[in-house]
Length: 152
View 1 (tube, rainbow, N blue to C red):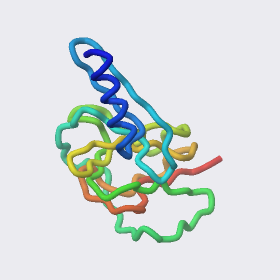
View 2: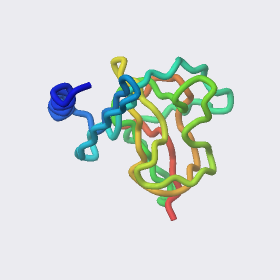
View 3: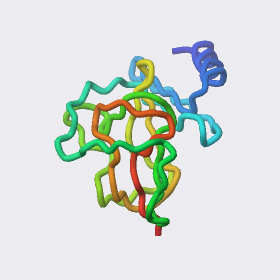
View 4: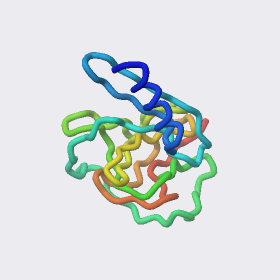
């Protein structure tokens, strides 16, 4: 990969609504990051995870995007797009987070596939995962709660 190709990749990332792009060619890895508003996708996974079977312990919860949170210390991490929710990056990989895990600001918590693009969703808060609101490999809507996080 030469400098001209790298410049072309930077231009493509600049024009697209993505904040992170990486590619590996001939043992050379190029990673491009830029800051975007919080409402835009937080990350992009360049590899496609294999389709995952729904997790047996994660039962789906029907929740409208504007459903109120009962406990003021529970804050939802909401879907930033319409797509399919994946708890792990590939079959056999451990999930990004489990109930009881402590997460940090900016930590990857899941992947949402939208139009064959696999977008890593990052946490916009820090706390403890109290509930996973959707089952693995199920469709999600924009604004739908994916996780409930107990903030300290």
